[in-house]
Image 1 (cartoon, rainbow, N blue to C red):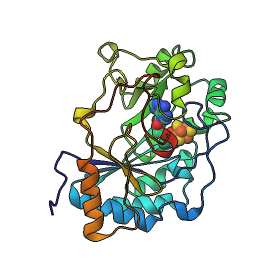
Image 2: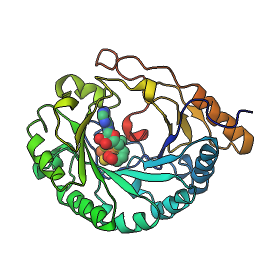
Image 3: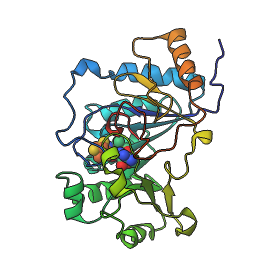
Image 4: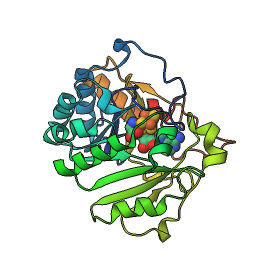
Length: 292
Ligand code: SAM
Ligand code: SF4
């Protein structure tokens, strides 16, 4: 059996829960998600076994995500185990619980966090997230900084009519020299499909100042450079964010597990189709059940 991934796959995004403490309008259905049984979600030992096999095959970076990863019970202990795999360990969070967890996560081996924050206006934040408190996220960002997580990356989905007038406010955040702001293009996936025509907005990377950039999966699909696999919270590998293809790895061990991971890597399409409202993502899951 080939013992490493045959393309330069080095990055695994691991969703540790489908649950979330926010319901962002472009990501989470209004009524939240159907509550799933505990047994539908991978146990920590299973996540560690799968990640460990992936590391044997060539993964060098693991990003923990969700749903909201910080709502998972035992998240710090899980991160500590993942940190022992010798990978670069990072986490993506909405920041609501970050003030509580930042120091412990850093001690557990999480070197950096990406905080998703789409508006710096408290009323808009409440409206967009259906009830979230901006001040909690800002406290989380400060805690991450104090814990030593650097550079701190803020991911803001660019949304026409919601935050397209906040460029200057986001730029101010970068003036400390350590904070980076990345605007993300809204993708027509999950809840994003219905909003896409009215809300898609983008920036020109060439014209952005230092420490600001745009992640442009819609304008510039980066499939040829894609080095990622994604593990869902229920134990499926998604070779491509926008394909319907999912391969089960739950319940597999040893050679069978490694072989399924290699199959997933080999199943990565050369590129996915363009993303528009007429031809949206073919993924069967929304971002809340993939993890970004
Ligand atoms: N709850 C965590 C958070 O918000 O950072 C982690 C999971 S969330 C699904 C990961 C990222 O996906 C967030 O930055 C979010 O803004 C982004 N996202 C969700 N739906 C999206 C969409 N339709 N288009 C672009 N980005 C999206
Ligand atoms: Fe939750 Fe993150 Fe989706 Fe917002 S973007 S609903 S915080 S999973």
